[in-house]
Image (cartoon, rainbow, N blue to C red; front, side):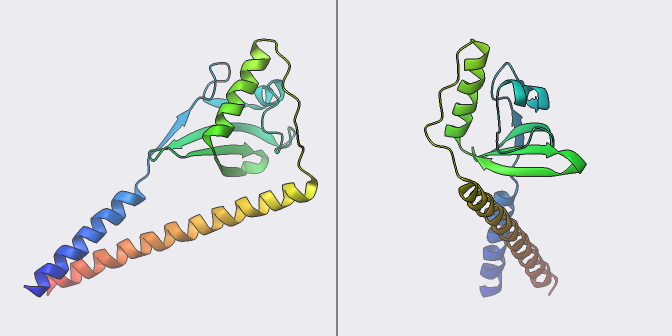
Length: 157
């Protein structure tokens, strides 16, 4: 009886761990004027993503996970792919920035411009978040494999 209860518990844990690890991605458009893939010309025309140099920028896409989180995926020269989470507030700001240019309005003046040190700290923070997310995903997958192995061993005995 205890063996069956343990197997049921392990199977349930394995099922939920796999369910959490299967995020689906969908490429979304942030404005009808730019579509789903933002080119270098559109980046320059609409003054988008100033944190990325025009000379190395190739394209960008906004990815939506099934849990309603968003990621900006930027393709740069030499096959470099940069991924950063982006908030709905930032998406709204991008939409209105494109809309302002499309309707001939001048963009609002920035109230505050980050210093180079602040930009460096922000990049460092984003990189740390990306690294910790990678390790959490890796550990989650290791747990799933371990649980599945335990279930297999328990069933084979």
